[in-house]
Image (tube, rainbow, N blue to C red; front, side, top):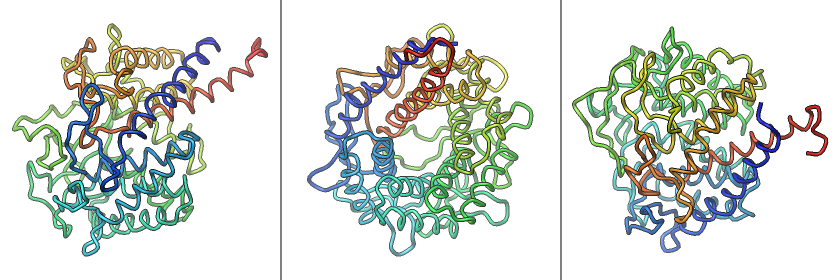
Length: 432
């Protein structure tokens, strides 16, 4: 079991980093004073690259980040101020008044340039505006969250097979099959829909929203996880038969292009699995049920990451791992590290096994020694090799902003504080 002073030390360092370095970097550099909304393109030194395209995902994730940071007590009110301005920019420029839903990409002034409806983004419309309302009480948050939810239920719901369709044109017609993704579903979108419905239900308390949340949790557990390993498949047919993962042609503003080679069907993402696990435990909290309800489900995610996802020699989490054997792909991406920090603390708090704390420290130490660029505002490199050398060193672009990094620190701090409180009750700890 970690000593109390170790937990307190990690907590203090994390709080100082978030409040003194990482959050101020984004508060100072992301707002666009000329046109509204946010800019998020920064090179490896934290300098603006000159790119000004505004993707919906970048704007909506910024809204979530600012709102959640404010709700957690960070930013001295500035997060709420910028979130309010960002919410209005989104509502004014990205909402499709003719067909409903959110446009995908706009120029700097907010004029839409890619009008497609991407399910991944529609999830975040629900998620971020619900969080914005919970953080500020601004009625625009509830209005846009409910509009987003209505569009999702009317246009994305697969009433035949269950779950949600994902890649569509402006008027919600499905994209072509194959690399355009019109014939596939993913764990990714359904997991983010779960977190969106969790925050929506937290905001409204409506029985219908509770049922939607319970429904998608059941769907994920019963249909989207491997029946033996309990790990997440990545892509599926409409009726949830697993498929080998392909890269879609959807324009993200910056991403890998489609490839003819599909990933093996047993390839899974340890970071994604652990993210699902901690989000599922949070959903249990919001539903008012015991976390033990999902103990078996989440333990499979935590233990696979522990055994095959975390690099015991050099630290950090691999991006892609087979379900039952070691990986040969040793690249490490920023967002998996961010999610595993949260998840391993949840695993330790739930199960009390010190191996999860050691896993947390493994990833924490790797992140702060290899990925965090303190001299450039504290953001993280996007991708590094097994040893921590940068492969993709930019700190911000069309979808890599502060959503994973700031959220990770906010959620990590909350769990470390809870752990400190628990340790105050241990024998011999009255001096804490």
